[in-house]
Structure formats: structure tokens, C-alpha cells
Length: 286
Image (cartoon, rainbow, N blue to C red):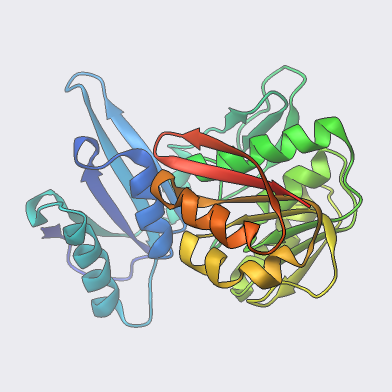
């Protein structure tokens, strides 16, 4: 592993050759380690891709470095392919070089504020980098956005819950698509703050709540893009919030059956499962 000498730096940058890990697995890995953003860099001449992630400096920097490196090693990446660097420039400035936005579904466009919206009729969602993860690049996020769009195309939800909201992207997308009564819940104070700020930027009205359990009231549309284990653990409480439809993601295809079993046991009916690469989104109705 190669590493620079620490100084008065702003963030850690991790680089791993793209052929050693696919983009979705890399983003999931980075998110679990509290990365602020990910991207990829293409070298056309060398016909190669480098995966990049940026991390805020932790109080225990030595432990943070060890966690990042050991996490990559557990994914089967050899130490010589892990480049972890302390950089002086603002991480967001580095991130701006790599992410210019992307279309999602038939109607949405997610972009940072420093990039212009394409001249088409897509619904614009502005999301700048911050300390809460979620810019729409991960397959599970795209699956959720597409499912939200599909629901909002059929009818306008009068109440929405985004459980584990992160940056607030899913809640904001619902609002941009016409939904009302939006609540975003996350256990991380930074995520609650990010959801509030991002909603204001996008002129979406929502209530951001700090917590790790679903609210007691019911919602027409409920979305949770978390991980399979916590989704199974909260199946009873989360299912109780659903009055019409539930969208779950953060799942590998291999975890779909256990999710279906857990939520059918709570009286919900499996509507469909949508797949993107090795990831899945599962939809239920009341």
C-alpha cells in the first residue's frame, strides 16, 4: 500500500484499480466507511478505470486508515493496489472533477449545482457533495428512484416516509414528483441536516427526523434503501407504517427471498422485484 505523509490536509482519497472491484460494490464499501463521495477516472490510453472515494478526516486518523485498508483487503484487493492519500485541497473540489450528474428513469435528472441541467424536460434534482451519502450513482438508489417515479406517475402520494434518508435524495425526488407530507428519518445527525438543506435547495417541503426506528403513524408510500439485515430486524415496525406501497432496497439478489418472507409475514403482498446488476429493489403493497 502507498500512502503520503500526513500534514495539514483536508481529506483522505482512496484509489483502487477498477478491474479489481465493480462500481456498485465499491460504492457500497465506501458508504459503509462513511465516504463523502465516490467516482471513477478513465484512462483512455491505458484502457483502465480507477475507482475513487473521499473520506472526511476522523478524530482517530490511524484507526480510520486501518479500517479503510482492512476493508479493502477483505474484499480481496491486495495491499499494493490500495492507494490511500492525504490531500490538501478541498475534497469537494476534487469530487467536482468527476461527477457531472446523471439521468434516472424517464423523468429525473440528478446533478450537482456546479453543472448545468441538460436542455430537456427532465425534473431537476440538485445535490451537492456533503457528509451524508447518496448522489444517485449506486444501483440501489437508481432502483428506488425509478420505483418512486413509477408510483408517482400512477398517482400522487399524500404522505411519504423515507427511512434511512441519507442525503434526502429519495424523499426529495418524491417531492419533485408531486408527493406531499414527506418525512425523512435517519439515525445520523449529519444526514438529518443534509436532508433539510438539500430539500431547501430543491424547494421541497419535508420533515427530517433524527431516529433509528420508524414513526408510529402510517404513510401512503414508504421507502427504505438500507441493508438487508436492518430491514429484516425492523420488518414489523416498518410494515406497520405502510398504508399502500413499500419500496425496499440496499439488497443483493441473494437476499431477496428472506426480505419477501419477512414482510409477507407482516401482512404485506409482494408486488414485484426489480434487478440492476447484482442488486435488487423489492416492492410490496398493503
